[in-house]
Amino acid sequence: MQGQEEVLIRLDGVGKSFGAVRALADVSFEVHVGACLGLVGHNGAGKSTMMNILAGTLSPSAGSIVVSGNDVSSHYNVTVANRLGIRCVFQELSLCPNLSVAENARIMHPVLRGFGWRGRAGEMIGSMLDVIFPGHDIDPGQLIGDLSIARRQMVEIARAFSSTDTPVRLVILDEPTSSLDGVLAGQLLAFVRKFVADGGAVILISHLLNEILTTADRIVVMRDGGVVAHRQAGDFTRFTLVESMGSVAREHVQRSERATSRTAERKVSAASTDREGGTMLVADRGEVIGLAGLGGHGQTDMLVRIFHGQRSRHAGVTVSGNTAMVAGDRQTDGIFPLWSICHNATVSSLARLTKGWLIDQDAEKQMGEEWRQRIGIRTPNMDNPIHSLSGGNQQKVLFARALGSDADIILMDDPMRGVDIGTKQEVYGMLRQEAAAGRTFLWYTTEMDELKHCDRVYVFRNGHIVAELVGDAITEERVLHSSFEAVA
Image 1 (cartoon, rainbow, N blue to C red):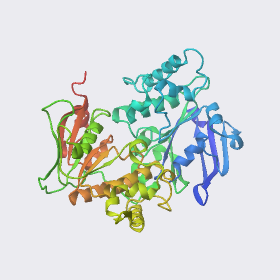
Image 2: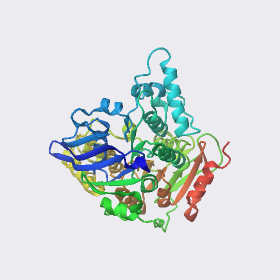
Image 3: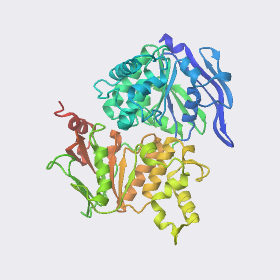
Image 4: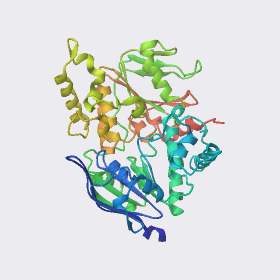
């Protein structure tokens, strides 16, 4: 394709340091017109820092940024990036929860002003949602705070691709499908291919390697703040991509080894959310139970009911044991943003970290350091603020909080969003070890590949459990069939 020869952005020797911490070192690569560039690497490899520099929210400490042949390094910022048609969809969403969908669209498009601007903004964002996610049910008048995290992600994506007075030339997508189910993710990736075919450019950051391999034209691999590989996508396989990232873990394509014995000790039983009868969700000691189906069909609501069931005798829910939750929406439901990494990791274990009436700070630091090493939290100091971590490393802290607690029932609300493939494999192994030791896991995931780690899977549709899959019956085909069957 002729457009692929035209360079839209060239980075040359870009570096970025935060005090003594070097986040980027001598990063160089090009973004071509009419192409999708895949960007992969472990959490903390420098991807998010690189994207913040491209979006104009951070200034490089060294190197140059050249856009369409013009060096813009000296004055590059968010305003300049927007004027050049460069947009970014951040992993940690930037929408204002107290504003409507249309009002959030207006923030990025100040040209929408004067009488009737809300209507014009709503029409613009609604039309783009129709194009990218046909069949969506998002009203431009809805408050962002009332939307699920998946729908918020859809709005942010549609806002980035919308144009008014400035055409969109490059969209940076940082883990754009992390909250989307398989159908919505497929719709987005199909739109990305059409967008670049029509002459746009996309940088796609994802830990889902199949998305990168099937969508990107070229792939850049980052490790420890630098570029370690930059080749055509067809030159990589899944294995060589993992190898380039420097993963110490190796992916296992076979189904995970399942627990061979059961104690028959019932830990959780829960009825469907809004009707009696039908399939009951049950979980026994030592089981890993999957919750599947299209996003927003009651899986998170079920986890919340179980979480509160231990304390409030929620109707239709019986829980035998202590529960802990690993939130998927970490910014809203997970982290304490003003606390340190250590405090965030140990907050569920304070009862056993006290001497008399006071917290034993030495014991707390020892626990924090233990989990830093055990789960691989990439930080030089656990006393650093939680927001000093990348999104994936923040998610590791939430795992450390839950697994380090005394809870024997762990509820996981699509927790692997933005977590790199090496860490995923380590966490999967840890879950199986903890399950073998008697812990019970209830795991909602939007990633089909993760269901192979479950002993049993319940498929949800419209708030109901519509299928129970066990063993070899846990397949993508069965899950999709149950998700769509009899849908009007």
